[in-house]
Image: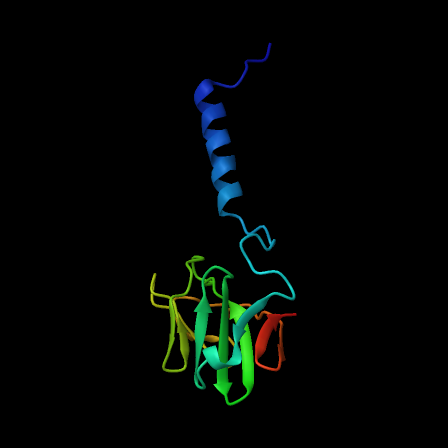
Length: 130
């Protein structure tokens, strides 16, 4: 004779599954800008700095004159949105992680992984996702 699982077991298992589903990285682009969409004008991105485009979840930087780069605006530490680009780094204010504007690599922990690069194209004065 088998016994059905206790109500507590069912509730705990269901809650754990929902929590894991909500915390997982779907790998999708929900909330992110789509390819071909204009992100910014080149004049919006200061040399040696960058701009955080919160709605698009993208950071566009210009480490040197005419050299534009783009990265995910979601910190690799605990998925907080990054807040600013200052003094050559992309900064997450949730826990203090900093990433280099040149390649998205970690400049200051607690993050241990670089910001993922986003492919862009620059045509005239328009910066677009590739």
